[in-house]
Image 1 (tube, rainbow, N blue to C red):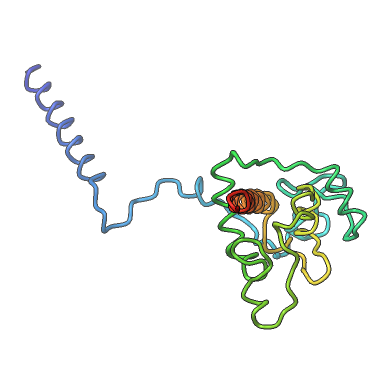
Image 2: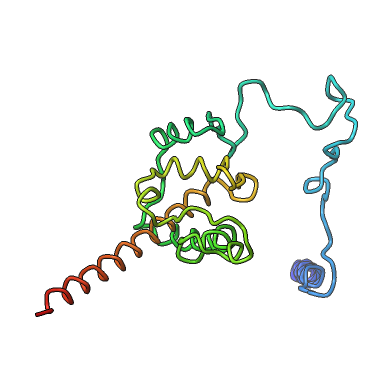
Length: 208
């Protein structure tokens, strides 16, 4: 009698296990059964919907006074030449020519936003110049070489003369990285000039 009862219990357990395996079988073409979906999709208010739970009955609330949103550190500069010089003295580029990722990203940003005016090698001979737009300053000229990264960052952020601000198109991180690419162009230009000077000196020295 006891054996029969035990066998019956084991049969029930076996059938239950089979039923459970059948219930949770993998079926890619069918939607899964959701248990307690309210734990995943809780009730919410849309951003601009009225909200009776706030004092002003608005869902979207302004930031607390004195706080800064994450990723939006303020820049305490004005769009003036004086502040551009101040930015050069106060700001530091977090990336360098030794950062391969920064160089790759800087090249991408340069090709998409800067090359059309400044040219592929930064000579100020971009496509818009060929169509009659005033040529921008060369990025490999001595003045640009001597310019500090912070001042370049200010110019990209606020604009200067014919150049508009690119703050809305290029993120802060990308602005620093594109400056690294500009430094690489300057390094290449310096190497070319040095090689040309050495060749010229050698040619002059070989003359009778």
